Image (cartoon, rainbow, N blue to C red; front, side, top):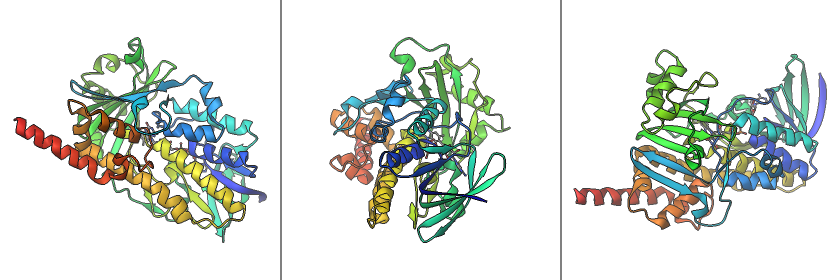
Length: 415
Ligand code: FAD
């Protein structure tokens, strides 16, 4: 079997792996990326949040993405019947980017991967990790090419960015069930022929069908739009009773008074994908000689589009710590990596849970709006979930519940 020797092996060329590898290459590390599929490939996760821009910028990937003309996302709109709540990222608490993109991921991820190659990084497509052995921190990874040939890659550090492939969690028995209740989704893309002119046509929106059920509408600059339904797993199973995802998504669209006219009669560009029980977790985010990033570690829920932000945050941080370790420093992966990442995960977990209890929806649609509360929630929705100056970050576990209870009391008094 042939052998290769690198400093860092990155598994997976999604956004997390591209951010990691670009940062390492920029710092003269001998890094290699192996990717199971051939790009462009379809993947879900099309609504970004501003925090990702910090990472694409720092990794040197921003200019290539910016040239692509992806649809700019300046905020997000939530709908519930006649009620509307719009967040504008330029009105958020604290510093940080006030815009990002909404993107067809096949094109977006392909741009990232091509830019990684342009930077001189050795990225091998159609090369799948099938085994890994750690000897202390050094490792030997076995990969298989599409022709069935295998080879060994020896690395001083491995960053597992394999997304739902979850290579190391599976090989090292690190899988753990998510704390969140099981939810599923069905989505596809449409050619958005009934798109309205102006902002209405391009605004990213989440239409609440029932407290725990919502429809996403993510318009792209190429004229297509992503439409998806999310809900408790048993609800989504019922929608697609005979496994017909096309019928299921059509039914879901018919439940949206706001969008049925725009999407009710258009054909899907591919058979809608059913993503069942998508939340996942791990027992540990790191071990001797490796770190897990992005969806290879934790995934919560699509409702606040936090997935890509965690993918790039963890990809960037893992790369920085790996670099310092290669340079001879002793890294405390527990405090510097795991505790930091899991703090943000905890904040978003509260927001996701409180979305599905309905408490957060009480805050979103409460009238008159409280501009100060909105600013602070907006910063969380922009992905700035490590800024403890924001009380909606620091006191995330109590503040939403308390405010929602006040609103409920106020409503009771009015009745
Ligand atoms: P990925 O983008 O999945 O990339 C991992 C790569 O690893 C893949 O290319 C894969 O082929 C490769 N790989 C897998 N196994 C192997 C192997 N054995 N060897 C080599 N390579 C391998 N996030 C958002 O930010 N916004 C959203 O709107 C959003 N919507 C979502 C909706 C749903 C229903 C779901 C389930 C998720 C959503 N997400 C969203 C989450 C988003 O999809 C992920 O967080 C994001 O893609 C993670 O990026 P990544 O780089 O970690 O993994």
